[in-house]
Length: 104
Image: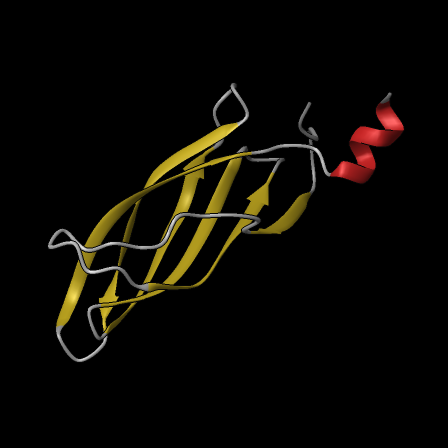
């Protein structure tokens, strides 16, 4: 169950390697979700390096769905190439191992 109020910042525990539409495999620079449980929304930030390009993207005020998931669209920049690009993301809120242990 999600908190009914407050906020928290989450980092990525696991992810696939970023891959371009052309098949170039890149490196993952990090991603964060800043959850606002009071307003049931998240802000997302993403950084990847693919095909010699650094890509930074953000998504603001994406709704937290009742299924404990978040899905949204990212808009960002590719350094020295294009001012705006876009993509999709999804995330699932799960309890930490410590919290799950205490709930047993």
